[in-house]
Image (tube, rainbow over all chains, first blue to last red; front, top):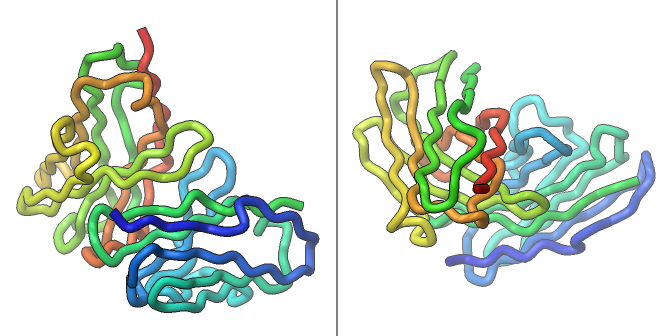
Length: 106
Length: 117
């Protein structure tokens, strides 16, 4: 199975900050990576697919980059709703695997 | 917009079978994969597998000997069965839609299933 490693595991920030979360795969997954946002008690919400494709309705302050094994999610000008846990997921091959998440809190 | 809703028992005894159904509304089931994903309390997400509308399945090898996912397009629903459960199978179980490239774009709200005697 492809292992996905996210860092940091937790991050504290303030409203208005810019943060970058990273995700690393243990083999080349090209650009087959999704990012999700999850708030407590809710289902994950897809933010970005194929590494950098912003999904409809997702604010443009979210952006994704990367290819191969190293990826990042940047959130510009943090808003209160952005404090959540973020997961990356490789969609290169099954079994699809997720990272352990980065918890972003105030 | 597609809507998914999980249903089924919330409590399962150890060694028994966990059974969940996901109702799909708002879109055709054709041309998508229909997935199950779970999240043990305080832990990350784990992909269980998917079914296509033809009945073709793809399972996570971690579950392969215990899992079955089926689809009934006439009822617009698909189902999960997980046999011989243990307390380690306690989790929130999500049904979800996969656009056939692994991109999981719509999720149900999730249902907590507890395995306990």
